[in-house]
Image (cartoon, rainbow, N blue to C red):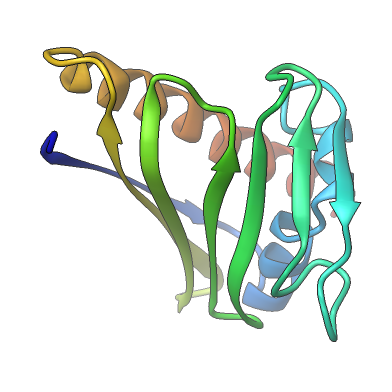
Length: 146
C-alpha cells in the first residue's frame, strides 16, 4: 500500500472565530470567493445543513464529492473525499479554528495516498498551493465584508 502523505497549511485571519468558521463552512457560499468555480451542496447535513453528512460538489472537478464527517462549531470541521480526486485516494481533511489575539488561526491538514507511485510529493505541493490560495481568498473575502 502507498504511503500516507500529509499537507498542513496555516493562516492567521484577522476576524473572530465564529465569523471565520461560519464563512468557511458555508459550502454553497464557496462559489462566490474560493476561486474553484461553482460549488454546490448536493446533500444537506444534519442537524446543521453544512454539518455532518453534508456533501459538496465542485464544477471545476466534475465527479469530486467531499462529505463532512465532523462538525464542531466554531473549532473544527473534518471531511473525506467520497468520489473523484484521481489519483488521490484515502483523502481525509481537517480544518481547525483557534482564537489567536484578535483573530483566528486556521490550520488545514489533509492526509492522502497516491494511486500513482512516485508522485505523492508533487500532489502534496499542488494541494498546499491550492489550500494557501483558498485561505488567502477567505481572508480577503472577510476583509471585504468588514
